[in-house]
Length: 183
Image (cartoon, rainbow, N blue to C red; front, side, top):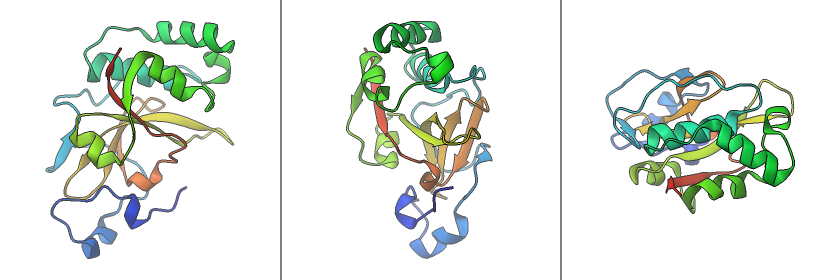
């Protein structure tokens, strides 16, 4: 697990830095609505179809396209494009860290990552990664909100098919892709 440092917190609006340390969430907890929740979109579904093996990136892309931005692209279109473009089957190999950014930017408008709070406040979700239960592997999640009282990040987890809350320091941040819309 990544160590949680104060700089990794989404700065809460009404909590002093001294109070933060008592409110840090070190391990993900299933999301439940709380006062102070801020999301990229109101009434965003807190569950999704569970990903098929190795398809965390493409399943999150479908969720972002359909649920966040109101599009209609099916996950199969992403899988087909990746297979043809990168000569690799994401259902067997997953999406390579070398290709994730060009792959995502083919379908989504993006902008430079500054921090999670700024992105969420601008109504832009952030694709990033967390440790997987598979050794030497990570998987893709979508940060879609935060709690302004606790500083906890709220993200959609395709492996577990629902939203979770955690300190943003839990994210590995091998990449932070800020999605601003669909192409």
